[in-house]
Image (tube, rainbow, N blue to C red):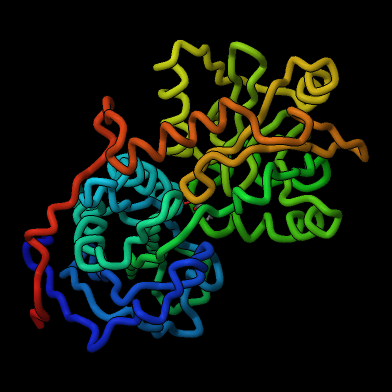
Length: 366
Ligand code: COI
């Protein structure tokens, strides 16, 4: 399908307008976007066009009823100058699962990875070179039918665009603090918690805003049934170092199956560290933070990479972890992950997809 990719180049690049010392997360968008439409029961002809607003009908089903899914992955400029995309096959698999749950026709095999590779190839000059920086790739599929009935759309659009970013949470600011939410719920069994769909993030805005107003950096979600078991943070999965063994909430359909989560579990097991994927009660976290058997905690996500967690507030009490500071295990995992992504460390699990820049189309082909 991507043999027929049409590329229309932007008249001028906006790259020079970006201050590389102030990237932030999601502040800048590169010059182009990949676009593919679903019509009459099939995905059509792909194109890469200059990034621009997309016209949507006011009755667009995605706007009203939230039929949309997205992904997030990163491309890196390695220390050796080569361009690497981290584990796009895992994002493709997760997007497939999200599509299925949201009644969105899945992409044909290979299209997701090819689309990501093509947009990264076209935008490779936008890949930032600082440590901890990357070109974040955001694929999005949304329902395009203009209709007011609550039913699956018949028309969809895939867009893939990119943004040069630094880590989601500022590492200079130190460990983050989380408020364990026992009032609001992110996801319930049988719901869409495992899917990467906008509604999960929209539902989190009010509780997160409330947590931030109380002085926390983010909300920590507990399970939706009993408000007793730790789930995830919203922008990242969570890990606890209980001294010699690490625990992370198991995948029960209510949390996002993070690709960084999966990578961290592998990196820990590579080091001979036992990893438990299980239910973790907030009472256990509180008890272990008090008796010192909770050594450190960190979040893991594509945008957040590895983010140390220094404090968890629960029922009006604040619980410090590792004296509120970042810990050595999280720091080691951060270095290991970044080292693999930049091609400095052995990629023993074959996670990186190297992008061949030689085959980059030099000119507009429209
Ligand atoms: C990611 O880590 O890729 C995410 O999608 C999290 C967030 C920026 C929504």
